[in-house]
Length: 285
Image (tube, rainbow, N blue to C red; front, side, top):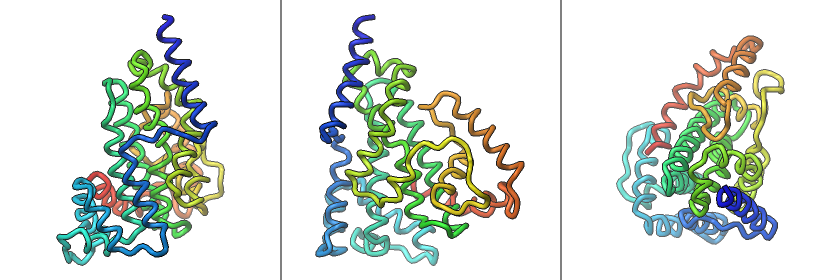
């Protein structure tokens, strides 16, 4: 009993201390994303500089080429085979997103216990689901940048992934999903903000990754936050880190479906569905 509570307190204290000191211990899988961010933010950098950096990581290189050849970025079917051409087609912003997706994929796999591994994989699958809907809805409604909406959806739960990776240092906590949820309830949001800030993502992403309960805006969605809310309600997957998420989603979705008109909720989701499916194929590699 003492060991469990000692580890729970130590885990929470460590995260709180790192946030206070602005020295959050980033997993090594995010290193390349940080380097790509620096290159992409440097006005003197070129697409060639970015391509050479991508080529240092075989997994990312393969994903970049596959993404560039996907129907989302290659609707006319003109394939590329090399990283430089793929980076040229995608541009710096989409290369950054792809690098983050690869890093999050890897982060969701790196856990010492089955409990944390299952929770992390489920959380990332939910983030991908929400991100794909956010992208497709933003493009359909034309009320926000689809790329920014995708990032906001993908990054909304990055704090949970980070905490799940760190839980391995506290074995008794890592075996207890309920205890982990208590930690995540306190620290996931501030950790997410710290990571989004560290990665120098667009300010809109930082503003809209906060947890939102229910749909309170006018219909149809008119802001990025509205889009993200609808994406969370539309997602087929449940959030394994939030007890009662499936019930919350079904209740809110039913309430919105009953009140939304011109377009109705089902009409809007139907119009956006093909874009969501195409992007899901890209995100899942």
